[in-house]
Each structure stands twice: as structure tokens, then as C-alpha cells.
Length: 381
Image 1: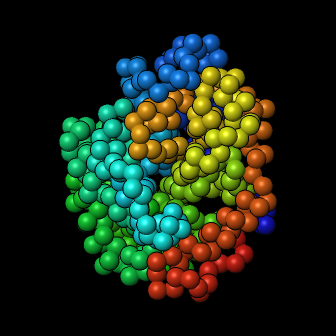
Image 2: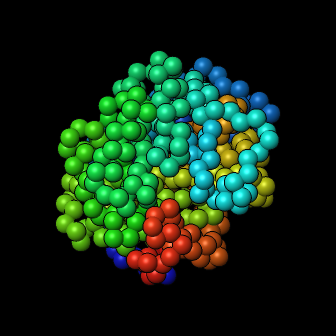
Image 3: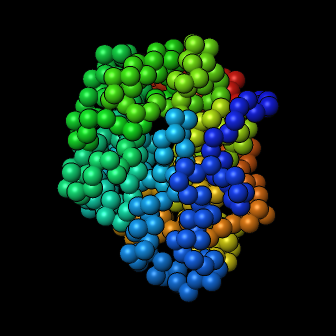
């Protein structure tokens, strides 16, 4: 594993608690805790059984959640609703491949229904993507909700197949995304994977789309340090650097050197799989901390995420879980508790990540299943 060197610039967003210098554009997370709830969570009388019952105050708190400042000063909500596998499972998603394409007999809720619920409980940042296959349903829910467009923060991502095809395909896909979502711009548009030999040109196309007013901010997803440096080597200027890198982040995959590098570059980290797809809810450490704070393991994971200054993007098709997942701003983990969670990442987890990265950068392209152009020496940790 490479060790990333000295931090290269000013950190624009380090929302870890309890430091008073937390860079939150309107209110700090700590002041949000105090003003919104007025008491420490350990004093709460709310039972775990009832934590999913949302109060009007909790809905208002979610609508007015803390924000993180992007490089241009744009306020990025600290929490959002992820739409992956909501109402639709892409054919090349790992779960679909594992099941041989079979679908569950259990009735599935539509993406429109799920997004309607998410908006109704107060989520205002929606994380979307071409690959997710449900942007039209998301758009229907937005239209029916009556939530003004200016109150929403919408992110989408362009998929590998489109990235490989180049400029015209990327432009056409963005037009489809805008039509499906019922908007004339997205707040943030990301390169979904750094497709070898293609992602730099794709990034430049998205910069052009920003200049045309169809994209407010440009970012990347699943980029290793070395992929980001590809952009710098191609002459991407300071003002055109990615404002966001969306990567998997949770205590079980905490790649501190990579994270510190991107923070030093002024890049905000969006965390996907913040809740580890529900696979860690029986972890004894999470359960122990949950008992202390009268919180669920999911809420401990979410709190760890926002306390580190990452954008937290939980997802669920159940409205009670949507409510529960958002209740992470009314308590604070100690430095010792944060350090304990930080230490849960194993060397095996890092190796698994590396294998997934190498598999996915060519996923669904004409090079799928090969290592053609794939970086074999990346910053893993």
C-alpha cells in the first residue's frame, strides 16, 4: 500500500466533532445538535422501539440539516437519500448477478413510492445515477411532492458504458437524466467510475456541460488517488478540480490515507454504503455504543460518518428506516469511541476493495472482464 504524503492544501470541509473549526456552511453539526434538540442524547427517554416515529421537530431538523461547503461555496447537505436498488436492481448489480437475474417473490415498492416517502420525511438531497435505472420514477416523485426545485440538491452520475462512448453519448445521457428528473439542471454530476483511457475526456465533457449551465458542480466517484492525479496531469485547473469524490466509507472500510489526501485537495467525500448494506448490525461494538446512546447500530454508523465530515447517504425502501437513519445529529461520539470505530478496517477489507476496484473500472464496457488499462498499483488504504 502506498503511503500518501503531506497534505497538499487547505481543508475546506472537516466536520469532525468536537472541534470548533468545523467547516459547515451555515451551522456546525455541534451547534445543530444543541439548537435542534437542546439536550444530550444520553438523556433521551425515547426507546429504540419508538425511535422511528418522526416528530415535526425531527422533520424540520432533517430539512434544515447541516451543510458542507464545496469549493465554490455551494452548500452541500450533510445527509442525503441514496436511490441505488430503490425500486429497480440493475442487471450487473452484484445482487442480480449472484441470483442469476432471479427476482424476489416479495412485493417490491416502486422507486416513486420510496422517493415520495423520503421527501415527505424531510430528505432534500437525492443521490441518483444513470446506472440506477430509476431516474424517471424519482422525477415523478419530485413532481408530485410539491417540493420547490430550489429546495432540492440533486446529484446524478454518468455510467461506464456512456463514458466509454464519449462526448456525444454523455451529452445525450445528461439530457435524458434532466428530462427524467424533471429539471433543467443538476446540482452535482459525477463520473461514476474512472474508466481507463476514457475518464479524463469524459470529465472534460462534463466541465463543458457545467459552463453551459446544465450542471452546477462536477465531481467523481470511485476514484483512487492515482485516478485523480490523471486529471491533474491532463491540465485540469484548480477551479475545475472535482468538488466531490463519492467512495465507499464506513468503519469497516476506512481508507484514511486516501481520505486525508482528498481532504487536503479540498474535495468533499460522499460516503456510499455508509450503513454497509445492513451487514454489520450485529457487530458487538456498534450494539454496545447503541445501548449507551439509546440508538440503533445504523445510527451509530451514520453518526460516525457525519462526525468525520463525510456526506452520509443512507437508503431504505421502508419509511420507518428512512426516519431512523436520519436521526444522527442529536448525539456525539467521544474521541475514544470514534477511534475504536476507525480501527475496525482490516487488511482483508482493503484487499477486497482493491479487487472490486480493478473489476469495476471496466464494468459493462467493451473491456468488461479484462484488466486492460486497469491500474494495478493504487493507494489502497
